[in-house]
Length: 100
Image (spheres, helix red, strand yellow):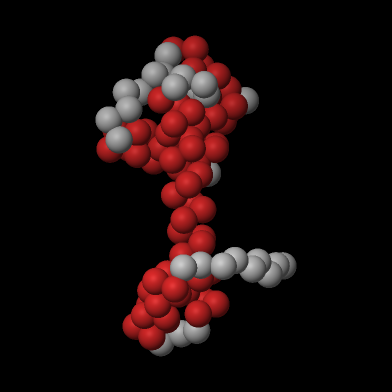
């Protein structure tokens, strides 16, 4: 169920929202939902990458935080030049989690 959120934005941001609403021939609410969905997804990924880079979470947990498959998260980590810290123990734990 959708819930309402009220936020004040600078006039420049409102102009950008209006621009994209016009370009996509839709209303402001639809554009705002798309932008927020995209921004939240990116924020979640950024948080997971940060936690993983600081070795606060495992690869599997970071992928969960990002709501991604491990392989996709590994590709994102590589794009951000974050070395993969994945041990044999991690592999065994993830294998057991998936296959029991």
